[in-house]
Length: 240
Figure 1: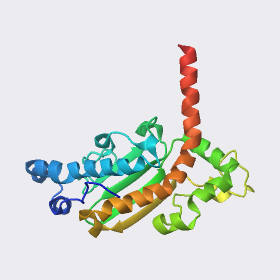
Figure 2: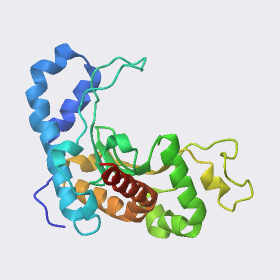
Figure 3: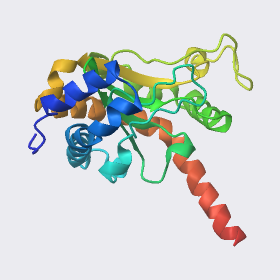
């Protein structure tokens, strides 16, 4: 894997570690330039390097790196924790036809002084999106299981995760052979890696390996949503 990305600078990881201790505006603002240079810019470069590899196996998810990187500012409106900043850098990569409001499946990774997280799937979808995904799973259960019940995915990403309902969701048969999957509220693959890899070229290698392994899983979850989106566009053209 050839890339100019050599890892995060040690100053960037140190900044995030200090930010966790001094999470307030008075500390952050005089050091914002350090954040931009040593944390945000390296994260953009990492996303660009990941995109360079994704062109081989997930071209539809390659976009503008800067738009994939999350802002450092926390949304504290509904949280008891009012600390204003995230003590980690993170990115979300969605299919080019979707945005965050669509609730589609995507790839996520984050870098912190404590760990590297690599994840993917669909999290907290709205009711209609969750229904579409469940119906797709119910009709294509063996194909869905094959995307994550294999040696490679389990080695790199572990088991399928996600909250589960106690009751059978409305509209589904309790005797369906995939009822364990249909009860799920989220469909996620998620793993944490050693934080020590953040400052070296191995970070890119490990992130890409897991993103590539989960691509069939992500694509399966998005199939009904891609069809729904295409149908909506056809209807909009018809109504013009």
